Length: 222
Image 1 (spheres, rainbow, N blue to C red):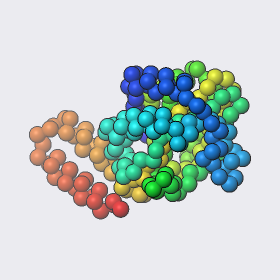
Image 2 (cartoon, rainbow, N blue to C red):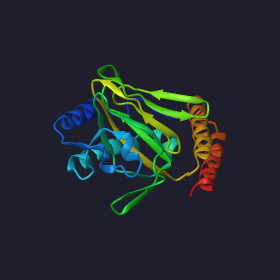
Image 3 (spheres, one colour):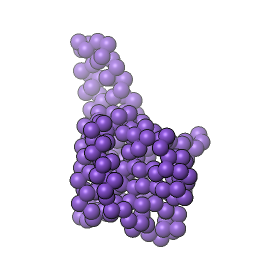
Image 4 (spheres, rainbow, N blue to C red):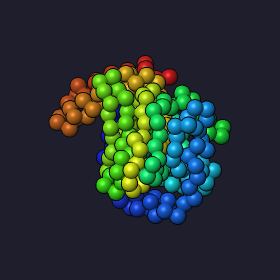
């Protein structure tokens, strides 16, 4: 679990929302199948809409320039970004993401999920992203421009929206490190090395630690 504060800049957020205000929204069940169609009730910009591609590239670029995201997710493939909206009464029941997702010629193994919040939390009521964890249920509702990154293997839902409009960008990441526990070990190690570098950038042992980290990453990679 990881929160990315100010993933999108104010200008990027303003551009995305201005264009989404004029977008054509379709039934979110367009990309649902089987039992999921019964629990998914939202709107989305069609995956075939050029606007989704244009704005999606902006969000993807923001993710890939974020060092914290890269250190945690070890991205190999990023699924095309989807844009979803929830008006009053809309929700998405408990579900788990598909293990493998096909986007035209690209197949993404969904190791990591990411939700980017596009509107301020005080502008809508309800709509929390609930994630079921071994230690209990986590509810997430971040500031506009922030994102949450979490294992795609978890059960999660979107609580019903009771007022206003919830608007988010969504994607899934195929990681070079497929196991969540391995990604967590590498992330903790990279953060520790980074803190040591800030304190003593001339420390020769940091070079050795970085070699160990890189070799550990090679060992755990697909």
